[in-house]
Amino acid sequence: MSFDVKTNLLIASLSCILVGISTARAASDYITTVGSTPNLLGYWRFSPASQANSEVNGYTGTFNGGAAVGPANSGPTLADDPSNSAVLLNGTSGFVSTTLTGQIGSQGSIIGWFNLSALPSTDGHIFYIAGESQFGNDFDVQIETDDMLKFYTESGGHTTDPVAFTAADLNTWHFFAATFTASNDRNIYLDGTLVATSVPGAHGLNTSAFNMGASDVFGGRFFDGQLDEIAIYNRDLSSTEVSSIYASRSFVPEPSTIGLLATGFVLSMVYRRGQKRA
Image (cartoon, rainbow, N blue to C red):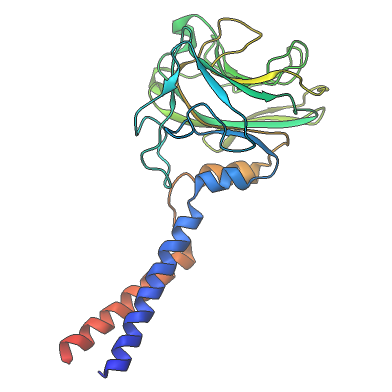
């Protein structure tokens, strides 16, 4: 095999492999998927660099009552951040307050991850995940003392996941999404799957602050566990968008990616055989 042929084979094989790897990484980028989904207001990753601050739009946050960023690997596993960290909350005083206020009118969504250290029925109080609490105009995601996940968007009006959490769910990361359009739909997704839906009432423009781990209106609802990757949108995310965000957490190569990698492997084998014959 001539030098030029061997060189071209080597270049072709390396190109296919590198393009395949690049495509695989692009398809599995959770952080980019969350950030590129339209109408994102704030995104809290709780990394050592960002701490309690949003990754977008300049909103800052404050750790209260002992809340803190955990060590590497304390958060859910993401393909694009294998050492991901989370905020640690003690269930008695810890929460995160932010400078993001209002901006939720007739539509809104909250997504993120939670990890329970205990059940609300055991601790004896509601676990507040995130939202903008406001009397008569709620926008809150929480797990109540019946151990069920609930999403409120009006005075008392809510959607409930009918399956309660149990001891088997402790110390396990779960992805959630809560989405709504006033007078049309209100949905809860758990681990990428729609688990509950209902028709809400009207919803006016919120004026309260966005908090995580406890409500600044309804006292004593301290989350016991870890939260991470909390994002808020002033739009009702579609089921396709929720599924795409959840799927992007892990690496699942597309057929085109597999083809590129396979082509690169075959070409590299041809090159090696040519080297042996030379």
